[in-house]
Amino acid sequence: MVTPAVSIESIQKQFGKLNALKGIDLTIEQGEFFGLLGPNGAGKSTLINLMAGLLKPTHGQIKVMGHDVQKDYQQSRQNLGVVPQELVFDPFFNVREMLRFQAGYFGRGPENDAWVDEVIESLGLADKANTNMRRLSGGMKRRALIAQALAHKPPVIVLDEPTAGVDVELRQMLWDFIKRLNRDGHTIILTTHYLEEAETLCGRVAMMKAGEIVALDTTENMLRQFAGKNLCLKLKGSLPASLLPMLKHGENNLFTLGLNELGQVEYALSELRKAHVDVEDMQLIEADLEDVFLSIVGKGSSA
Amino acid sequence: MISAQYRGVWTLFKKEVWRFWRVAFQTLASPVLTALLYLLIFSHVLEDRVQVYEDVPYTAFLIPGLMMMSMLQNAFANTSSSLIQSKVMGNLVFILLTPLSYLQLFIAFLGASIIRGLAVGLAIFLVSVWFVHLPIANLAWILVFALFGCALLGTFGVIAGIWAEKFDQMAAFQNFVIMPLTFLSGVFYSIHSLPGFWQTVSKFNPFFYMIDGFRYGFFGKSDVSPWLSLVVVMAFLVLLTWVTLKMLKSGYKLRG
Image (tube, rainbow over all chains, first blue to last red; front, side, top):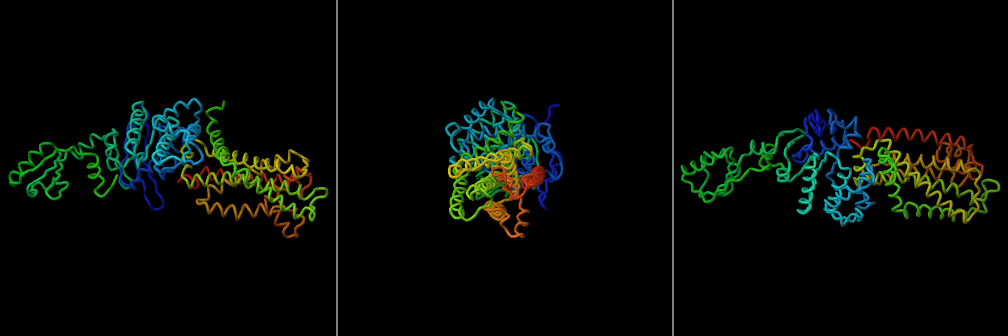
């Protein structure tokens, strides 16, 4: 049996009276592109900090590539690269120096320099490699932060909101690079506020709410199981009462109906005919992860 | 060629040395200038009025004290400022995410603080010997007290850096603990010139022993035996190292 990239068993974390994680069990296999979603305060970053050994669990165990993050922390950290959420940097050094230092902390020497250069190139940092971290723009600092987590070429990479506040170009560049790393066998764990990113990139997602995992499945299954498709209608008149249970959203004469199966389209149209309501326009839209997220985590939450 | 096993600690040590070297004007030149100003003013005012040891001019007496005071303050500043800056800026996370053990962290931070302390001490020595003849009675004592003095304050700086959460807490530590202890340790005088009560008080100040022992290395004369000073310095070093390692191992204020 292949060792899981990350195995989390009965993890609980208490901050004073706050129960931040209430017994999480999760296994992420090697080579997965895994999404961790949830509203602010759901416990995503706490879980990542526990994986990284920045926090100690109140109860439970986490292993990275088979190594306990508390007892065998040196091995587990060798296998893990974490991109922190906050835009932090060391003001004394330039990008290349920082990356070489970071690799050095993990025991990597000059033999690793080619990889550091590749990371610099792939993240579009080549022009800024000799620029002091202080002088970089916000987007460039974000790139450098990501590069630092990759400097020792870890098999498991955790990206905590890596694209928060960054431009489209960097997002594209970052995801191209991360997808390539994933194809090369690296396990990627991603938390993001951009659900369309998770939908496009992640093979499997876990949704967290108030310190618990409330849904865990492949992205495909989750989309199928929870959301199906959406039927958007522009009507001349109001929606018949028989269709109200399917209504997801209605404003003026625009209505969105949630469908579990395609056969429901015919049902909706026949009900409209019966009620003599004309259809001005109609669109069938695939539900996205946001629909799933809202149906599981609840409206009024943001990922 | 350094092995992968030791590269982590070596890298952190190197980074910490580079960190203060990058701002050498502030970390090296500035304490040297301050020490020279003390030397200039105190020697001008007191050279003809005070003689602490026979055959030792006051200016010469002053130099080892000023060297040691600057070494201690800078060794403390190196570890404490690096830690508090990294904590406040948030970039300490880059070190906490690595496989470096708590002992390796301690060794790297401490090593860099000793280098800074010794560099400052050496620079003051090299500049001040232009002005006054400074004998060297026993080089071994000079080196022993310089090394262990810097180590003791470097360790103290790690404790302060871990404990403090804000710059003003660190400033309080520096101004209300380190400064009074260094100034009241016999840098500018022999404790034998003090009234009995203050002599006793001075003997509870570990900084006194570092300065007195260090001065013995230059003049072969001191207020107390250098062996006693060494025992006191080593005892404090062992105690503070134990406290520091306990703090680092438990993750106190570093890992929640």
